[in-house]
Each structure stands twice: as C-alpha cells, then as structure tokens.
Image (tube, rainbow, N blue to C red):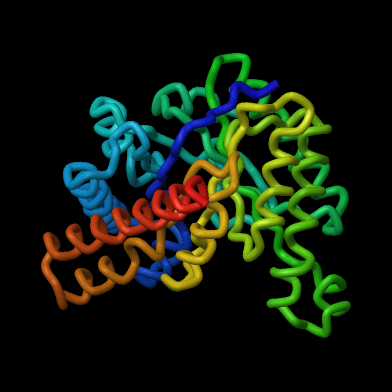
Length: 308
C-alpha cells in the first residue's frame, strides 16, 4: 500500500532533458561540458524564479520543484536544504518505453539526491504493445517496491498517447480522443498498474476537460483503501488558456491537490533571454510571476468550489 501524500502540492517542473536541449538550444545527442553548463545555467534561472515566487507569497510548505540530476543536482541540494519539496526523475529521457536513467544503479542515485519524490514518466496505453507494457510494468514494480521499502514517495507521470487504431475509429480526430477516450483509458491504466503492484503516492496526470472525469481519476487513484493518494495536473506545454482551464476544472475535485506546469511557465522567458531580448533578471521575474499565477488560479478555483 502506498504511503500517500494528501496536501497541497504546487510543482514547478523543469526536469526536461532531451526536449529542453532541442527546443531551447537546438542541440541533439551527447553534450559537451560547456553545453551541459549552459543547460544547468538556464535551470538555475528557473529555480531563481521559483524562489522569487515563494518570497512573494507562494506558501513555502506547498511549493515544490521537479528537476533532474544531470543538470540540476546543485539545485536539488539547495532546495532540500532550504526546505522546499523536491522531486527528481528516474526515467531515461525521450524514450517511448520506460527505462531507468541509471539502469540498475537507480537506487544509489535516488539516495544521493534524496528527493521527497522519485518521479517517473511513463507512456502507458493498455491497447499498445502488450510485451512492452509488461516490461514497463515489471520495472515500475521494482521501483515502487524499492521506494516504499525505504519510506520514499513515488510520483507517477502517466501519458496515454493514442494508438493508430484508436484514432482511426475517431476519423483521426485527436480532440475527440482527448475528450472522449483518453479519460477512460487513464482510469483503466491506473487500475491495471495498481493490480500489478505499482503504487504511486501522487499521480501526475494529463489535463481533463470535464469535472466528472477528474472525479473518476481520483476514484481510481484512491480505490481499495488508498485514501491518502492524490492527483496533480500537468501542463503538457499547452498555452495559458488551456492550462488555466485544466487547473480550474481539477481544483474543485477532492483528491486533486495541485499541479505541475513547466514549459508554459518558463519556456518563453528563457527563449527571450537566450535571444538577448531580455536580461536574466527579467526572465527570472517572468517565470516567478507565471508560477504565482498558476497557484492563484488553482487556489481561487478550489476556494470557489468549496464556497459553492
């Protein structure tokens, strides 16, 4: 049974690696030491924006970062010492099939970084390749067992990309898949993973357009006595109105305790800084402002639902 985490959780995720390198720098493949340092510098700027937001009113006990060891080890250590909630990914970046970033040495790296949450990103559609799903599930069970045997928390970011046959049934309508099919597939996947012994403490899920689907996702997360397990909404790099809608939809549903919105928070500011259109401190200020706005959107919607 998972330990659970049932309190507000406002995550600024910047654990992106291969996508971050490509989108912001245009780099692919193995990085040089200088390139690695440049990526680390941009992640330090995101962290500075996060700290500025906390200094300007985001409740510290609810504020968290999600950053990778490769580019953010110093950030993770500083955040832990400062008392922020920390999360660190364990998956290899940019892979269709989940694999450990550091192979069978994953436990040593988790212990060295000592985050509050070990986070895993998995693409899991029950109608996808069964053998691949079985391999992923076995690795996830290994991680889950290790984390809970050592009193550590598991954050599970689940993506459910459509299979070709699923889209074909909808005439290729991706919007219809997102609205009418994905929510049910998410619930099925959560139940299957739980039945296989994979026990997240927090499910980090793609945005849902309807409140009733949020309710069903929480019911799956908390079934069978998993009463302290919670869900948070991820941003998926979508535009501001879309992310705002997802946060407002989820915030009023008991069991949704927060969000993890990354690229929509920082990418535009970082790109402008890299292009020398704005100075670093302006980028930091913009990132902090955006993060504070997400907190305000979520808390406002939650309070509105509680008062209605």
